[in-house]
Length: 309
Image 1: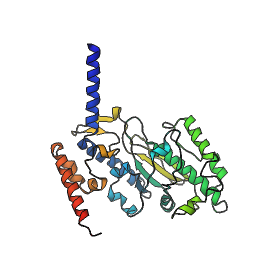
Image 2: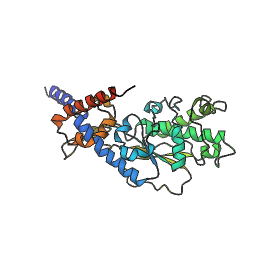
Image 3: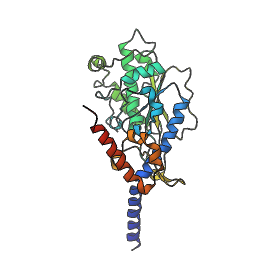
Image 4: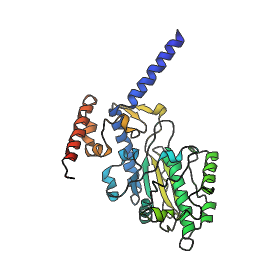
């Protein structure tokens, strides 16, 4: 009998967690809390341009601090490219347009988040490090007479950087082997594929790229002046909390990685609509929120349909 009671209690607890996790009110207020951290980070590194990593990152990127990137193609690094055993450089989403921004502004901030269980999504902990390593080695090999660092130097200094707390030494080594394999995009006759198959050319960067990882738990932000690399800040904006949930005295439950999997909770609200009506949405009572979102979504759809094609 006691075992049955424990089973039922466990099921009820899991059901309650799912309900709280998918509650739109909780999600929007959690996003607002995390977005405040991104604003602080943008102020700490004002010369770096900020890009949300689609799709999740778009919920945290305030258009007020995105204005410098307005009209440019967003960043799109897939976590699946960093999944164990699937490590790869995505040829369909090369993100080469980011290189000009990095070169002009000295670095870049990439924003994403993940749900409970880990600090970083695989996009930040592995896909972007792979991207940096591939770009570094490709540039060094393509522009041997134009850059001040070589492929061998870059490799000796650690062409691949991964966060130790998220990527084991074994996995790191396996990823490095994948980069060096004959199937690598960096094989001598393939490196020119960047220029051949994309409108964005591969520029001769004068410094290599290096990923740096930041979370709300980062105690001290790194000083990034007088450095010999271009920093690619991989920012996981959500706090790491037990079970991915943490109740707030402000009347909502904080949900780690709230911007993720928005189809399950957003009620067709989009990041653009959220930022356009942020104050209205966050001041709305929980009981009235669904009606408000329905109204905003409907009005947006009507406005879009009235625009001449």
